[in-house]
Image (cartoon, rainbow, N blue to C red; front, side, top):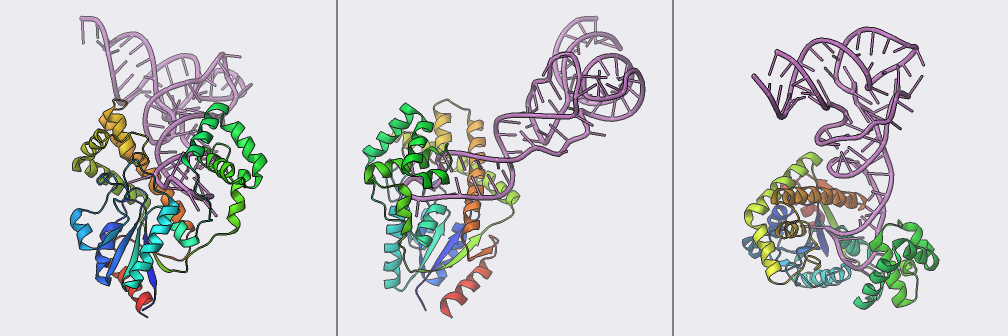
Length: 302
RNA sequence: GCCUCUGUAGCUCAGUUGGUAGAGCAAUGGACUGAAAAUCCAUGUGUCAGCGGUUCAACUCCGCUUGGAGGCA
């Protein structure tokens, strides 16, 4: 047996959780690759595995930060690599299960070493964009880092802001960090789950209805009571922000539910776009558990 | 039964004085280096309800048929 990790990826509502639990038979542990399940108190809306399921197989990187704390791709990479090494020590197979494209990318292809930019600089940049307008700030980016400016669109506020903040903090163009992309030497078996788009969307709709029945509204209300605001990092999650709008009378309940469904469909589509680019994925339908077990077995033990 | 309004993209609707159509949403494709469930980009042919008429030319004007909404008896 070699040092392999198994990646299980797929769009939201494709059935990853059910599959990952079955894989417990391999004697592995699950590392969640999900930028939303890291938040505490957000269980229903992020479709975390149930308490029983979490007990059945050891899970990592679930419910580890407060909803007003920031979690990042860099933290994910660091923590997941630590965990993978620890599991290898214990002779357990790491199963990286989730749907966050950037996180998978960070661990598959690495991340450039860019210093962590202090919050003050980010708020300074945000204020600057508000004051001067996005266009002016994009023009600044064209001057200090034309390579990156040409790569992104002039409306892409988040990327413009990121490139500017890195420049202000390091005095070097954002793209100058890209030359080096340090990475681990882990070997991954990549399993992808997908299905016909129409069916996936149907499953998304059903799951959103189920979340409402399971108490997503109460869960959101509770988060508000705990003092987490609409703009807390955790609350910027599909499901919660729409329910906050309903609770604060900006939309009706039915509108909020429809919006959650629509936004989740959009999200699922974006996930698929991301996964298509990762090469070497073995693709399966969500019900082909036996086939998946077979291929993992072959790869790991022979 | 009579009168008025109405039928245009999957949905909601624009369409100026006749020159065979265009927005939003949806949908589809894509980008992605520590906010990523985020942020952003691209893509609009549809018997203009049907049939007939007027006209060089009809989504546009006229008639009939048909579906819908409202009003009056």
